[in-house]
Length: 149
Image (cartoon, rainbow, N blue to C red; front, top):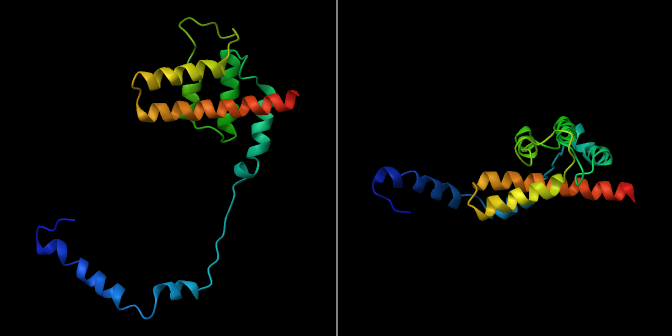
């Protein structure tokens, strides 16, 4: 840190004095305190595993239409498993004039889109968003396979 004037340095000295004047070892003070943590888990968090499985049972991410993708996205958002922004990434059609009832491999399409973004200098946030979507789809694929076995 470079100090250019006394106004910057003056707040440092009282802090140093306050720390050095603590009685005993500060680790002893923390060690002798009784600390308790409380964790609250929302209903969405408690039900997340069941919600993932319920959605995965209804959708094969390797064989979906755009209409089914929209329904799946709504279920994911309603269950608080996906953000609306990630849902928009999920809804990009594979090509122009793509018929909404035509089945396609959503996971493969999203993986190709992610690879394209990485290879061609996509934004960091856009790539992170696509990575989240691909990870969600892989999770759904695995749960679908387990349920179908």
